[in-house]
Amino acid sequence: MCGIVGYIGNKEKKEILLDGLKELEYRGYDSAGIAVINGDEFVNFKAVGKLQNLANKMKDFTSSGSGIAIGHTRWATHGKPTELNAHPHIGKKSFVVHNGIIENYQELKKDLISKGFNFLSQTDTEVIVHLFEDELQNSNDTFEAFKKTIKRLEGAYAILLITQNQPDTIFFAKNGSPLLIAFDDNGDVYFASSDTAVIGKAKEAYYLEDGDYGYAKNGDIEIFNGEEKIEFNTKPLDSDKLSAQKDGYRFFMEKEIYEQSTVVVDTMMGRVLNDDIILDEIDENFFDGINAIKICACGTSYHSALASSYLFERIAKIRCDVEIASEFRYKEPLLTKDTLFITISQSGETADTLEALKMAKRAGLKSLTICNVDNSSIVRESDVALLTRAGIEKGVASTKAFATQTLLLWILTLYIAKLRGTISKNKLNEEIFAMKKLPSVLKVTDSLHSKMHRLSKRYLHGHGFFFIGRDIFYPLALEGALKLKEISYLHAEGYPAGEMKHGPIALADSELFTVALMPKSLLYDKIKSNVEELSARDATILAISPVEFELADDFVKTQYSTHPMLEFFEMMVILQLLSLEVSIRLGNDVDMPRNLAKSVTVE
Image 1 (cartoon, rainbow, N blue to C red):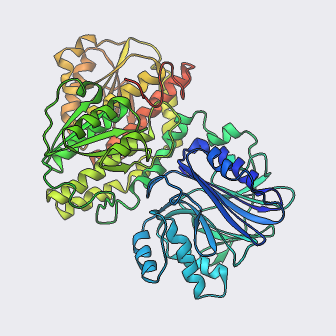
Image 2: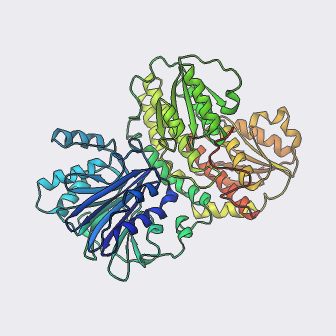
Image 3: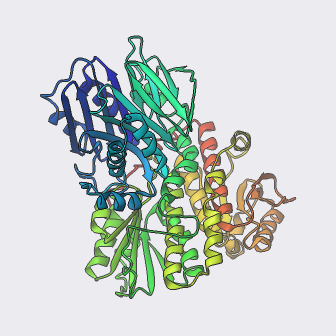
């Protein structure tokens, strides 16, 4: 999501930082800023929107000679995209930039306010700079104050901090968010959240590990982990910027499939605690008078909505209807004020969904959106917005957006169930325990990817695909079919498995490929019977299940079988990899499939 750059040296700092931030634009951002300490100079610049806005503000600024500088592009998580919420955040004599989420920021903020610290932003990041200056009041050692600051932070972070107390030093820390230190031949030091920002400037880099922290001064680097000072070895930097943006993956879609195991952590941070679900974005009285939910969405977002409808009714015991936004607009829907209207959109600019939301608002309904882009049209139009925090998704065929939407809807289900008293404490803890396994569930192993690569060569021809599943696995079957259609251009349909005998089974023969989602934790015997019916008609079966299925022509064994949502997410990754590998074998442009756009802003 956000991007970080830093620099220590004699070169013009403005150009180095602006260029570095520009190379991080592909990650997505809504505001940007730079802070410089250059001799007696202690300045910062911020701007909302594109980097050019920041460059325009800095056009008369120069900073040659020895000095330090830090910069940041922000993707909003706490607080709207405004100059006050943009990084760097400022204390009395210090600046900080930060990627990640400080989970205990509210507790720290309350304590700091009681001590007289004044907060200007709505962000979690601002607590870091005030906490540092609070620790500095009780210490003559600047680095010791930084160490104490880091120890009090809970959550994920990549941090650069500079202060007038030590104007030749950048303090840094990394836990859960990427950060590297890079070096050129002149002794200058660079920092970045991705090596894209320093390619062409530096020759070698050290990629910080979780728990690393330290400081850089006059070309010297001191790195610690715990109380132990560590020795580090640098690696040569890649020279290809586009390759660096893809982190070595062949396509952005492939990279985004792999990123799912980390972005779900961002989605859960501050929301999923050890024994509770918290949604600070929602006022505690927001659900008063709500007796039903209606969800409107399109495409992949519609599939995440459909999956969540099973959860809302099963766990939260609240009626949930799901509508395709483009159809909803013209059906003259009956809308009652006891219905919460939920919209889902990756971009927040989906035209049909936005118009459906406006209809609901005119009818007086409360509105909530699940979105990836703060300050987008749908977010601004909604009463409440829950951000998925997936970061920018460059592949047109959605992967991590679907994963984070579905997860956030699961979180919302548990939150509403808690408010309505429809879930016991033990059941809530079971759901949270399963949810916290997701990073492991979504991790793509070499053996799994290799298997899907080998399997894909069997599925390049034939007259089509059926993706079948039951319950929440029916929406997943729809999503699997959509992924394959989008990037391989092969015909695919998603069906509820029980509907096969009501017509579609007429198509079954050896050239019909059936991808069967067969979870152990939910209706296994029912879908097994449905797949057996297809096999008896000579359909080619690719079974995905933790249970061996002897009639399968191909079989992918899954690992997680104790909770339906864990099986859902594991099978989701398998379907994404299957589509990816089929498309690659067919020689298609995976990231930019024909006829499609990432943000559908027309009807």
